[in-house]
Length: 132
Image (cartoon, rainbow, N blue to C red):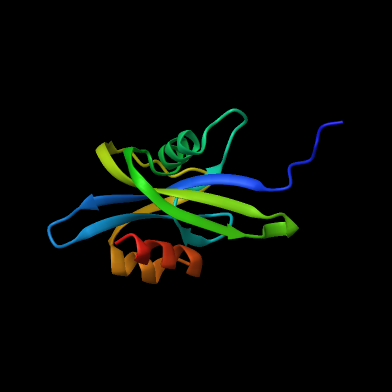
């Protein structure tokens, strides 16, 4: 019998880009949850945390990025199963070709303080503050 996974493992990114006034952060709107959040998703079998973070960021934003450094970890318990999400600070390299899909319908680039006020989850707001 296959052992049941007791922790959901996910990875994501804080995607930063320079603007004329300040650094901007990418935030996404998910249709299923009707929330504003940071791009993230579950690891696939055999995938490393960093590989998952890069894949999920690309899938949800259409942005090609490179990892700069580790941003932090958020843990919470959806549906009575602990979930651990590792985040990296990322820099946009090249264009973002965002296409709305069944998971994510909007991508916004916002000055970090506006991004913090838009994000729905306090843990994510605190993570952004620690990485400015």
